[in-house]
Length: 449
Image (cartoon, rainbow, N blue to C red):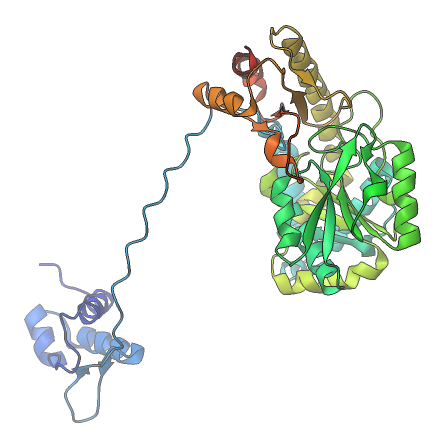
């Protein structure tokens, strides 16, 4: 027989009291008798009884026997409803918005992390600035100015725990300022509409044409746009529309949120600068490392108009969801060392090649699926207009599941209800390098007639 120590005895008695084996009000054996019965030291029993008395399971009074305390009746926990089975993971991932994770610069990131940890002063290990570590904000201010034409000092940059938090903070700030609605491009990313809606704001869809969002049809005092590479149609906002939107923002004191989710990846020319640089006090710039590095880093950033810095900073302080410190410091080191720029250039070359290979595969198909006419050579996805005589969106998804291919159709991305042209959004970045060609063959099988 194994003799229990005081911790094991405490756990056994506690369990017996909880399940009713030791009823409320019943006496427990004296420490001496229980010790003799179990063949253990009396002190072991005494420590167990003292612990249970401190927790409220036993009542011990001087000169009186120790008894089981009256506990509030607690019903047995209900069995949780059986979880729905996890969907089978597709072999070939063509969902948009995902980078090539196999190309993550592990060696550079490890070196940057080591330098960051080595050089970080002890004070950096405190709670930190909710606005983000100053070193990363300084590095971002320099990088965004030279690569994305962003005009913002470090004091106007807030580092966020991913773009979802960034949009949530902005939506919260807008609601606090009395805004009742926000405009989104139509089509756009549906999971983002729920964020301002959660703060009580209405969401309006503004049509997108070959020049980008139709600025003349804006309905709200705030609008979310993707000017560098519209998601999901792939349009680049024309110079005329950029000028018109910036002018309206200044004249009417509108707030424009420039979601620059994949702006670094332009293949037919130098990347076009951000819209924020045209009207820094009316445009919020939102960037992220999710497309250039990895979503798991949970690093995004906002370059804010001066009037919004303090409100958003306070909201972030109260949210408690601060971007992880060591990831911030490593990101700063990666940028300052030049390794981040090198990684982006390598990725740009890879994605350019993949886009060309995807185009060649599509041209060889019998089905007449074609890239969206106004889509530019950029980003991590292509949106295809489905062949009118070919499969419908639902049939494409069914065929994709049968061939273990994961992709998205265009239908759910429309804000306004009604009839819309069918399409498929093909993200070509996620498959690893060695798997891209077989993945492409599987995709063609799905899309073929």
